[in-house]
Length: 244
Image (cartoon, rainbow, N blue to C red; front, side):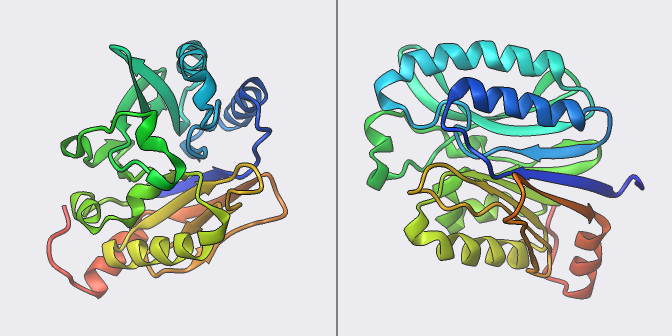
């Protein structure tokens, strides 16, 4: 692989069990840990939206995050977890690389149809920003946040936008439409990771800056090689002004 190439792995298998999902994520990491690879897991992949056990899931997540930090070398791993701070719960996405957390972001737009607002506090939109790992500019929108055009503006200039999600199956077509539009509008790669029980869209995919969609419904994850230079080429070809 050249310095501009990146292998993406977007998970689409959910055992609906904290420990089994953690073991599976660790297995995927172990197989991809000594190369520059992006691994994206669905929203709250470890514990799910278990509102009856929020405190327990938060405590288990602390230990799991410590295990993942000790494990992760060259891989870039994106996932969200339930975290507890001063008696309040947040849906926090973490990015781990080289044995440290390189970025955190808490969900700012809570999905009322799923009663998220009754159990989580929302994060601060000011904390949504681009971050760089291995010379690649990343950004994250967490599931429902994909619907908000004001947040698209905040992540202009990203090379890769990651979207960990548990997107409702009845609106699966919305997810693809929005992800395509984001890829084309921001002229970037978009990585969606969505899976869960039967109510959740099994919709993991990788989208190019031209809006092409790559998916693999036969495997437990979507794997795709991308070339970051494609974002540069697209932005030169269709000049929409400075994007970071």
